[in-house]
Length: 109
Image (cartoon, rainbow, N blue to C red; front, side):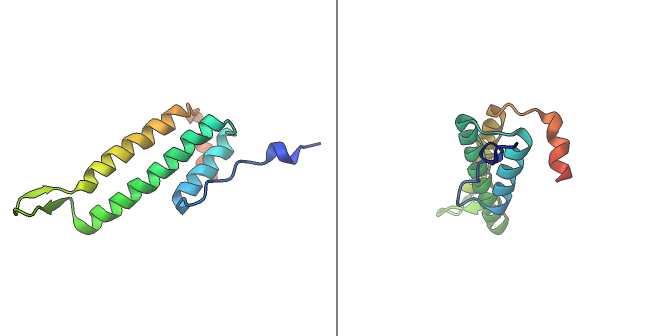
């Protein structure tokens, strides 16, 4: 007889975007993650994804450069957010040590 408590997957943290919730749900489902430390890494990755997407939308709206108060063209500050959040996202996902051979299962869902 199956234990429903054992088969229940951890719920996605509140406040995540649809894209981040889907990342959470599919990752937890495919790799059966229930370890608190790994769930924290996944939560951080999902939050990084949301911040990355927000910065990308702002840059899409404003452009990659801004003009400072002296009229000099500078890199948009959001570009640094994209770089840093992308790096943090990759690092958090790497800490999960996922078996990437199972990625085909993600594409089937």
